[in-house]
Image (cartoon, rainbow, N blue to C red; front, top):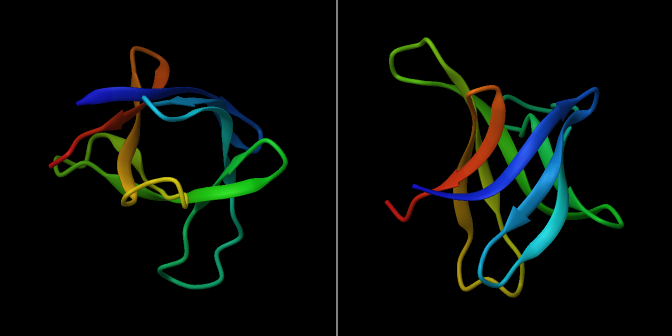
Amino acid sequence: MATIGSFTKNDNGYAGEIRTLGLKVKAELRTATKDGEKAPDFRVLTTGNVEIGAGWRKAAKDGNREYISVKLDDPTFAAPIYANLVEIDGKHQLLWSRQ
């Protein structure tokens, strides 16, 4: 898995930066108002409140760790990017895998 972002937890969700070969933006995973069972728990926003994705709270198969499943999309992407925001040693990392 590759780290494509780092975030800090705050009152509204998480704030940080997403970095890939073609993208380097400040971003927020802002807590969203759920309007349905499948609605996201977070909206991923960049500067100017441009929405580039969403996130859903999940639990690891062993049930001991929680994470946020994130889907990022933008017209410049060939396809959506799927990643997980996980806490590692007290830091929140956005991890991407092609699987």
